[in-house]
Length: 189
Image (cartoon, helix red, strand yellow):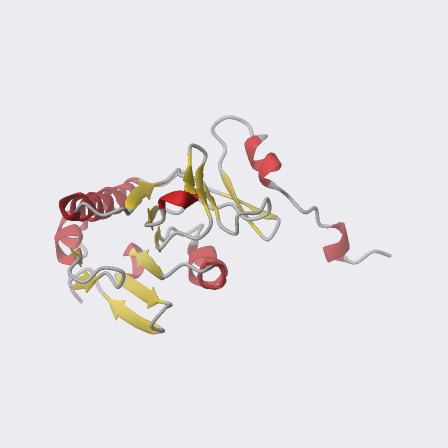
């Protein structure tokens, strides 16, 4: 009798591209995870974060580029790991093609929804670190929490929507979550 893991199908990027129109999923180590459409709160947070980050990058004139979901990240540059982070920043132009990013972005931000909680806090945390992502933020509006993992320096931070949070990959970029919190009605605490 075969074990459950022996019967489990290993998915590839090809399976992602064969999904019906309108369906989205991510792949981690050949396992497919369906994605629910983002709600209004998640979209508001993503819009505000992207606007701040993109404006900062443009003002500095650097080589980094910011992207928002859906944007394909072929995390290990293989056919078994494909994610669509809510926001990612890539500083190595050689990783970018018309299809997306091949390799680890420098900075990834995931905005937690009820259906993504386990993925964002556990599965992606470990996968992103192992793949070489330099910085990972988990933004959890339900818990009024922003967890910051700077993998290079092994620093972590725990913030609320009442705080300003410094981006580790830049010397002088601060995201003012209190402004986002005001939009959402969840500032402070």
